Image 1 (cartoon, rainbow over the protein chains, first blue to last red):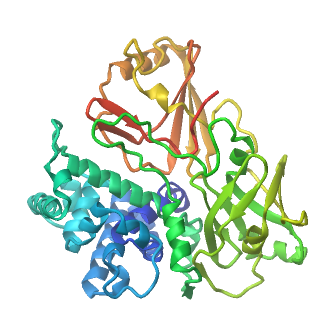
Image 2 (image 1 turned 135 degrees about the vertical axis):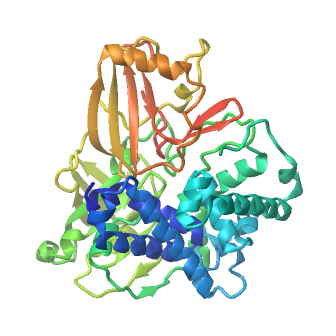
Length: 169
Length: 313
């Protein structure tokens, strides 16, 4: 697959992932662009991989986590933007009405990222671990902890409900 | 999966749908441009952008709603003109703008793209532009042009200005023309070369209801003469591939789908950039299967379809 072809197929998907991770349209574009730039530099090697998209996604995810570690306010999720977010954000008003989004945004970055990889990107534990460069057991534990945190933070009526379907591996 | 997990998934999918379309990613990755970004929109305006986003594709616990969204201000029965608007258009003549500049290298990139989520985006040749819009089949259109833009100087093609003033539009063949409220022509656009103006055979709409099992328990007609597989690029719905699965294989495929209790691993969300529609032909009912964002909620399979794909006549 040529680079242009990859971007045509997956580019917007990366932007969407960037937006879900960061809650910021500009940041989402930057993350996608960063990931694609890095992938493009080594595209000959990347295109030979079994799953080039997993590689590019890993770049994006790690760029996001690195940015959040640096503590830039731009990486602050929109739902907690009230504490120092200087720019108006397109999603903030919507997020204020979304308890789940707020609860998610209040989680530590790595826990939030694991949840997003699991429930937005639909990755299994092994793929989450690969994306974050951590052990699968760590990914599993982080996911478990993140869900518990989310359940505790979210509205009790929602947290109480369960169904007969089981989580996938 | 718990209710909490379902709600989390739905929330994330909804958030993902709010991401703006970026149409020059490849260019920016290859030739990165450091852009000076300026927010021009008020918080109220951008909140409106967010609030005008799409519906959530996943239903709540036990829900049986069909996923999918509609183009703003359109209904299932009146979509012809608004559907024709969807996709990318390049300016060929803008009133008050030197036409010769449209042939300049940067200007050849200038374009506007209308998606089925009620969002428009594009470039003036140098800067990304975008916002929301509402169009109706009576030819009226309003576009929010107050969204975030970058500010790079060049002979900026005034796509944004055209949409800011646009009150009506017409589509004549491959030509899209915008008019101001007083009837003045603002500019004319055309489809980029190579973009099919009419998609024949392959549909641009689906019947989400058709994905649910019918009274006989079948998801698709059991004896199709063949299956037409149409692949589209999202969000322009540009037809990129068309192939036919012959009868023998089509019947096997139908049987396989009807036996299946759900997608193999249950989920293929979020939607990929390419969509497939499977048209089962030769049956009493034409079924279009749009692909790959299936969500199983309880015993109900919901299918997220490309926004705007609501009905196949």
